[in-house]
Amino acid sequence: MAVQALHRAVNRVCMARQQRPVSVARETQRQPHHPPEQTTTLQQVKASFGLSLLGWVAGTGEVWLVLWLVGSTVSWSDALVLESLGQAIRGAAFAVPGSLGVQEAGYLLLAPLASLRPDVALALSLAKRARELLLAAPGLVCLHISEQALRRRGASRAPAVE
Image (cartoon, rainbow, N blue to C red; front, top):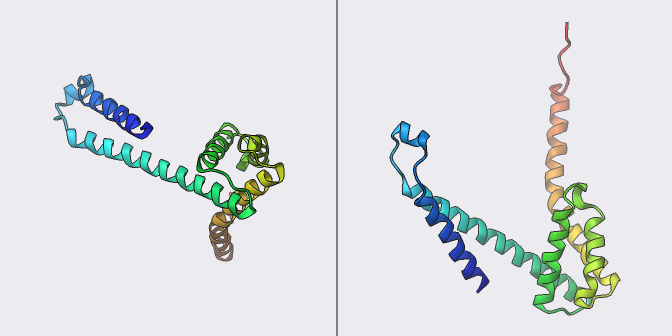
């Protein structure tokens, strides 16, 4: 129901954009109005929303699976609450690099909402952190290899200034 309401709101905003008066700059250039571009924009908004929703559902599934593997059964709605509030806490602490410590403290604070023990909440947080490290490892390996190749060629040295 919430997804349908959001879909209607996005459609209203995009329809309002199509009926907006032409700007002065566009009028002086005499460019024709192209509705297909705005349809593409609507499709892009829908695709963005769909991918974001898919990522959130995947994160909720990850929380549920990790808690099930640890031996603590939670409902899907509890897993959704933990994931969404955990993401909100991480987003609020954007100034902390990698949100190190913020995620862990956030899950420890959120644990009572789902009737979890603090050790289970810390295990969930560390499992999520391990996933992040496993996904970042190939990128770090590629960076290391490319840096080594640059050093072997001598391209990393700055030319002498005369």
